[in-house]
Image (cartoon, rainbow, N blue to C red; front, side, top):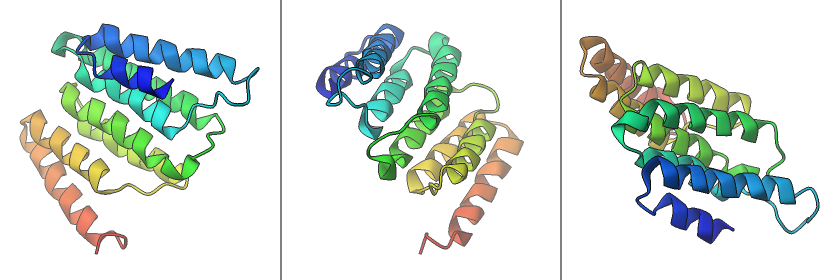
Length: 160
C-alpha cells in the first residue's frame, strides 16, 4: 500500500494525485477493521498528507484543509508507530508553508501546539516550515514572527 501511495504522491498529478493517495489511505483504514495486517502507519499518513504539498497554487486552500483534516483523523486513531508522529505534523506544516494561504505561519504554530498535546516535540523541520511560511507572507508582521520563531527555536532545550 505505502509504495502505491507514494507513487500517487509523487505522480505530478497535483490535486488529483493527492486525492488518489488519500483514497488509498481511506481504503487502508477501512480494511484494517477486517485485516490485522493492513495497518496505516505514520509513514502512510505523512505520505498522504505530503501529497497535498505538490498541488497547483489554485488548489492550495483545499490542500491545506485536507492536510489538517487528515491530521484530525490521525489524532483519533491508534497508529502502531506513534513514536514517528512528527513526520505527519511536519508533512502538514510543509503543505501549509508551500501553500501561501493567509495566516499560514499561525496555522503552523497551531500545529506545534497540537503536537504537544500528542506528546510530540516540534523539531527543526517544523520550525523551518514555520519560518518559510512567515517569510513567504511578505509582510512585516510575518517577518517579525519568523524572527520570534528563530529565537524560540534557539531557546528550546532539545535544540543544542
